Structures are given as C-alpha cells and as structure tokens.
Image (cartoon, rainbow, N blue to C red; front, side, top):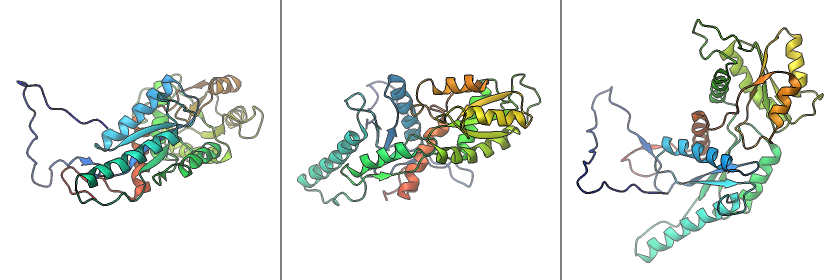
Length: 310
C-alpha cells in the first residue's frame, strides 16, 4: 500500500478547506479503519494481461470509495509473481500483519495481538458459480490469518444499471427511457446470458427483472455454458422470445469477463442469430459492489476521516 509524498520544495501546498458548518455542509469523506482486514479480489478464469488490467481497475474503484484500504489481487489460475495465486496473496497479507505486530512489540509499544481475519476475499463474479466458489473456499481454508469470504456481486440493481449501459453503448437499447429519440437498432427482447449453471441463471433472472423494468422489453436469462439445444440455453431462450413476439433480440452478458471462456459469447450470439453487448468489465458499479460485499462481510461502517478507529 503506497503512501503519499510531499510536494517538492518551492511548489505550492494545497491546504485542506475548513469544514463547513450547518445542515447543508458536505459529508466528510470516509476512510478505512486502522488495522482493517485487507480486501482481496479473487479472480477466476485464465490469466492474461487484460485480466490483470481489469482486476486492477476494479480494485482501484473500490479503494477510491474507501481510501486507506489495504488491497490485494489473487488469481485462481495464478502461479507466479506477476499473477500470484489466491493462496500466495493471503499468506503474504497474513505474514505482513504478523510482522507489523512483532515490530511494534519490539519497539516497546503496547499493541493488541492480531485478531479476526487478516483479509476478506471477494469473488469477482456477477453471480453464483458452484465450481469457482468451491475452489475459492478451498484456498481460503488452506490460508493463514483466518481470511473471511464474501458473497458474489449479484443479483443487484447496480448490475441492471451496468447491463443497461453496456446495451446502450452497443446501440441496442435507449440510454434513457425518458428521452424521446429512438434507437433504430434497439432490441425488443433481451437474452441475459451467464455462466455457472442453474443457480447462476436463477440469480441472473432476478437482475433480468430489474433490467426489464428499465428497458420496458422482455428479458430472459440463459446459460452460455449449456448445450445449444438444452433447456435454458441461449438458442432455446432466444427462440422462446421470438415466439412471444420479439423480433429483434440482443444478448446482454451478465458476466464481468475473466470467468467467461474465450469464444463462448460470440458462438452463442451466432447460434442465436442476434447482436451482443460487451461484458460488464470494470464498470464503476462493479468496484462499488466489491467494496459493499467487503464491508457487509465485516459488518463494518466506514468512518469519516479524522474519526477514531473502530
């Protein structure tokens, strides 16, 4: 975790503004409590520079919402310094906490011994995926420091917002229902796609209802990893929407990206004969949901800057 450095000699110094008084003063910014567990993002899927960039952007968004937060990124397929495994990251964070305690006691400071989790692991998943979560649980169980494990990011209204934005960016939905202009390529039916099995499809269906309310068009969830002609597959759900009256369909991937096998989305779009928007990626709401899962797991309320630590 880096620390800010002061300005070079002769440069102007930005002084803090005096705190406004009265009922309309701005809320004080919040910071992570001193000694709070690290937030560790668990990234599934094949490792690649694009995956690392996405994970770093998501964690940066979370940290911007809670300055001072210690963070880390662990890859389920990682095995080196560039892409460290989740177990390696958790072990390092636990060792750092122990080292800080030993240094403090050696210096004669009276400090409490480390208690509670050294880190909280947040899966980078928009919805449940049994196989991925089992791997994460195994890594957490084998790691020192009693790490905690948060839930996946969805279903959630912020995911519906992100899906809406991605569809509008692709020209497949109006950016705002209140606007009077039309989008010639706007879809009149959405196939909300996900991976992770039946549980993931059910969770995506909840987000899909929220998306349908935003778009005022039918939305049905489907599994990208299902066989083409299986019940609940993209092709089957697309055909069902067409039978109900939708003629211009679009795929909306309810996935962040790393968990999606390469080529699977394009193959499904071709099979169903419809356009697709981009994956959720590092949309700002993803970083906010990561932080929300972290604070919810800890039962923590972030504090305004200058407040005593919890």
